[in-house]
Structure formats: C-alpha cells, structure tokens
Length: 309
Image (cartoon, rainbow, N blue to C red; front, side):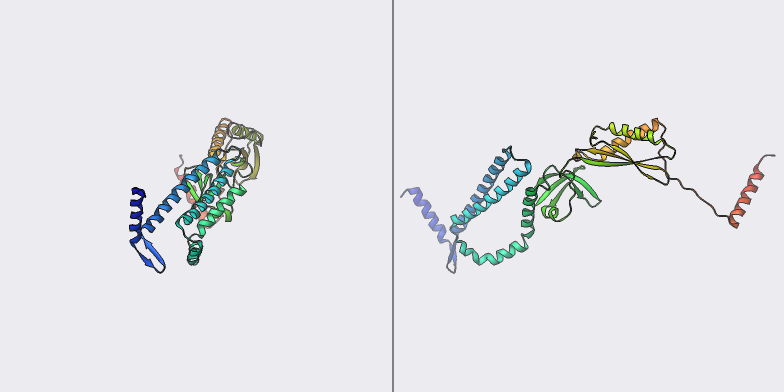
C-alpha cells in the first residue's frame, strides 16, 4: 500500500477510535469531522450551482424578468433538494432512520418554519400569476396613509418596495397574497391624477378652462392621450371648484411633482390674467338685543363727541 494512503488510513482509524457509543451507534471524532466536511461541500456546491443556474436564466432573452426570477427560484429549490439528498447518501444515513425524528421535525416545521414556507410558496405564486412583478408600482401603507413605491425585488421571504423618499419596505410575500394590494401598473402603466383648483365667483369659466389646459400642456410628463380634461366639480361656499384630470405613464417617477408643476403654472397664468383664487369668507349676522343697543349708543356718542365743530 502507498505510504501516504497508509498514513491516512491509520489517521482515520485513530480518529474513529476516539469517541463513545450510544446503543448500537458509535460516535467518533472522524464521524463528526466527516459530517462537517460533507455539509461544507454540500453548502458550497449548492451555492455555486445555484449561481450558475441564475446566470443561465438571466441569459435567456426569450424570458421576461418575472419568468427569469421564477426559473431561478425553482432551480434553486431543486438544487438544494438534490444536494441535501446527495449529502445524506454520502454519509450513509438511511432514510428509514430519520423516521425516529420525523415527529419532532414535523413539529419544528409546523411551528418554527410555517411562515417561512408560507412566504416561499406565496413568492412563487406571485411570480407565476404575475400579479406583482419587479418594476410594478404598488401602494404601501407606511402608517401615515398609503404611499406608493416600486417593486425592486421579489425574494424568498419578502418583496422589496422602494418609495419616492428612498425608504425601502420589506413586505412579507404572504401579506401580499392575503390582503388587498393596489397595483398601479398591473395591466397598464397609465395613471390618472386629479388636481383640484378653485376660482372666485364671477370668473369667466371659459377663460379659466383654457388657462388650465395651457398649464397642463406645459408639463412634459403629462400624456396627450388619454387627453387631459377640466371638470366642474361643485359650487362651493366661497369658490367654484374645478378638477384637472391628467394622465402619466411613469408613476415610479412620482405623482406629487406633476401636481406641483401644473399648479405652479396655474398660479402664474391666473396672476397674469387677473383670475382670483378666493379664500374662505364668512358673513356674521348679529341679532338685535338690549346689550347691542347700549353698545351702539355709546359708540354713537363717542363719535359725535370727537367730531369737529
């Protein structure tokens, strides 16, 4: 026998003798070392194969980004399943022996990994039915009301959504499956924005409409079709209320900036054309009473006493 192989065999024999017995099983240093080596090889090998699978799917141009992500996740699950089974086979562990631990392992999955597996399956379903996909703009409840953000990534556990103020929300996949989600770009990326404005009574509404349409046309992000419009909303207590309806096809770039740009232009055009934007006003009616008459007489005497002559 080769001297090197002989030394290796002798070292393995020595390490195998160092240990203890539990029933019919012998637990040795070599056995533990062998398990660690196999686990490291399984982990590293599965990671490398998963990365190769992801690169392969990303190079397939016939698939869109959602289909690529779905293929990557399914390939990763398959690679890890094969790697774990191969590791068990290399270690010589009989699958029937694992039945001893099936009860405890089942409870661990049921209590500890229930949400993890639920989010994993929910993420795969989201990618399969394409209801939410990377690049979509969805409404996010940030505690102060609903704001919107762009879906950056659909992970194994959560969906990453980045809002306009660069805050990133990690929403569990299961939440998106079981709760109502407002997707601004599910079937179309065209989004309508309503911009209210009020003018004073007595204003020429035909001129106001022309000025509002001119302000809308000055914003480059507003789409010419569907065509923008001006609606008469209501006759308010102090103003005639109108609404401008405009359409954009890039909601991920923001909505508030479009509204601000249009209103700035409206303000300038109204000032140039003497269109008044009213503020709330109230009429005060005083009921006749003895106290009011005494106050009126006192004011009248004061005014007559201070008049010249």
